[in-house]
Image 1 (cartoon, rainbow over the protein chains, first blue to last red):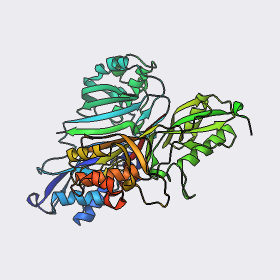
Image 2 (image 1 turned 90 degrees about the horizontal axis):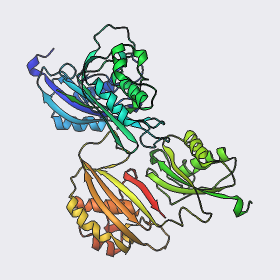
Image 3 (image 1 turned 90 degrees about the vertical axis):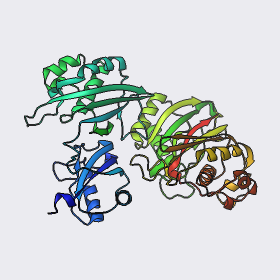
Image 4 (image 1 turned 60 degrees about the vertical axis):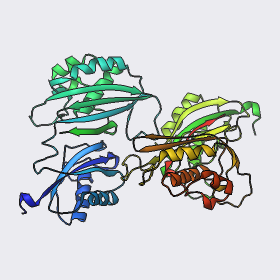
Length: 249
Length: 249
């Protein structure tokens, strides 16, 4: 094993259309994951096995405008050549938009301070030929004022157990949401959520709950939050509407 | 044949991602065209053969936000049911966004007064995971001021022979461009061209020529225009960047 001094720590910014992949990193080894594809191309270029660490998993069908991932290598290749090589060899729906050498102790997941996700809803009766992979088509007109009013109550440090997909682990479900903004543009509704971390399916459960509120099926998000019971919250919004926009360090 | 009075003339607004199709209407019968697919679904719903007339052909890989097409039918089906049925049965990348009953003599192509096309260029060194089917990736930085200055000279009534793909017909190549606007947003450059009609590949040849000017490979678009010779103009820009935005009547 090479010593620390001879290893470079390279950070990638990765943009991907998640439609065709089994998420960033799969639990079981079923379909190809984005992480595996990049590792394979890196191996080909660097002639060396590398392990790529992402800032976190994104589920099957979830997209990213700026996923962050890092790997260590003893290769001396220039960063501009490596970026060019990766983008030539990767599938067209995975693009390296940024590349940088970072301090040895930088870790995409452990060093992350906050993440920004955007969820897109297409709120009309007919679909879109261009956005069907990137937005949740929701037929019932949503009351945006009501959604905004309730959304505020999620901002801050809370136990988000009500918004966690049922899993057997007993890890803490306390997280902090720094920002939750809802914006309409034409028939599209964008929900931006920035937090220090998210429990499994949290963003999609929050979106499903907010849509439940906007359509009059649910009310009082504070009560839902305090109940700490997933059954009280709304549906899990489809993966396709979700996009990882930014990871802050 | 039913008489005019018993026939309804229905106008559709069609949005499509042209990536997977052989254009709106094919010359030869090779791959499936968007027109054929809609006709087939219409036949299934209306239980009647219909002929769908588009405002014009779009080439393989070209997109549309609002192609206009009309057909005549003796069916009494409600328009909202027909729209819902079409959008349920059509592939996800073809969507009917509007439907209306129009006067019997309305014809999508012959009644059209003008068309607006938008061409999208991604002007940077690395590709986009989301836009690779919808934009021309052009590496060399383009001089927008120069492009705008030269573009103005194409506005008005001209013989656009220099911008016509070589074909054997001897039809007139005189057309009027009402508007030619170039706009930058981030790394994207949008070229909007509105005219009373376009000769074959005209928009894509104009874009290729403007890009030639912006990259310093070509100059003086007025001389190119007056030469009436396709060889003097720039390359034909790729189909994927082109989108039919609007047809005016």
